Picture 1 (cartoon, rainbow, N blue to C red):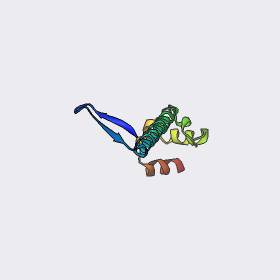
Picture 2 (cartoon, rainbow, N blue to C red):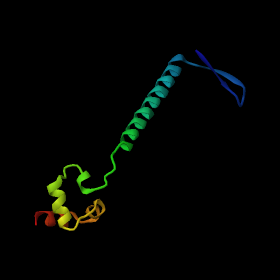
Picture 3 (cartoon, rainbow, N blue to C red):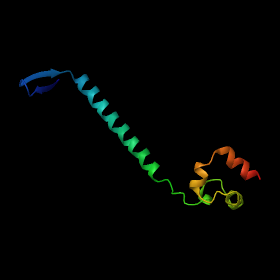
Picture 4 (spheres, one colour):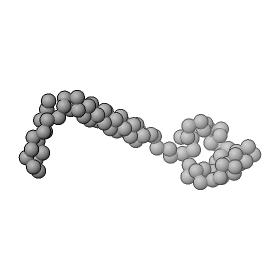
Length: 92
């Protein structure tokens, strides 16, 4: 058994080993979860900055040309436009 000292009352109490082992296991799992979350956060920060319409995934030069001709000359203009408007103008 491990001993735990209550500093406020300066008492020593015995803690069963199983309780100590379970506590250590939970602390280890919590540390692992925090590490995994930090790793996922790091991945989010690696996203490339989109500066022009052609930087968008799936938008090639032909589609970018159609969008530009339809009046969407920036990523911001495309982002704030209603999807129906974008679809209608792209098909024109």
